[in-house]
Amino acid sequence: MTTDPWSEYSTPQNGDYPEVFKWEPVGAAIVGEITVIRKTSFEGRDVPVMHITRDDGTERSVFCGLTSLLSQLIEKKPMVGDRIAIQYVKPEKTSGGYTAKIFDVEVKRADGSTVDPAPAPATSAADLL
Image (cartoon, rainbow, N blue to C red; front, side):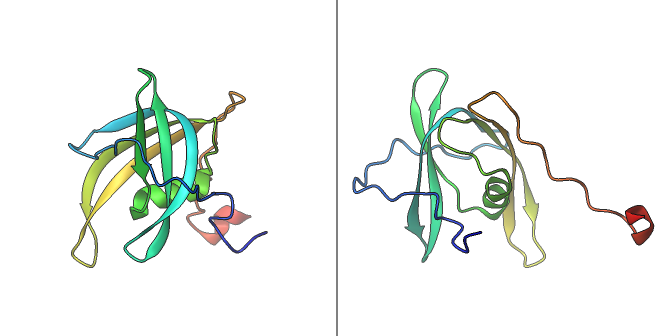
């Protein structure tokens, strides 16, 4: 297992990006096929950027640095060719006083299989028996 979570992403020489998808208002969603996954530096850290071609043929860039979105993408590991749906579900106050954007992410693999969600954690040690 590699220690670099971005090893599967390439950084193209070309710095062009399709129009950026905006997460406004609550409920905003993008659905389509992932055509490119690459990384870029944003606020001093590397984050993935996906190019998604929507069903109407338009392509948008999705910058994936927001914590709720990034954690789901790391878990579900979408790949180029997969179909993805991302929806901005709600804003949520954090313990630090910030407002985080909460997302729902669904991935259908290029072969038609779906990505199963992570199993729910056990509620007690007795549930482990």
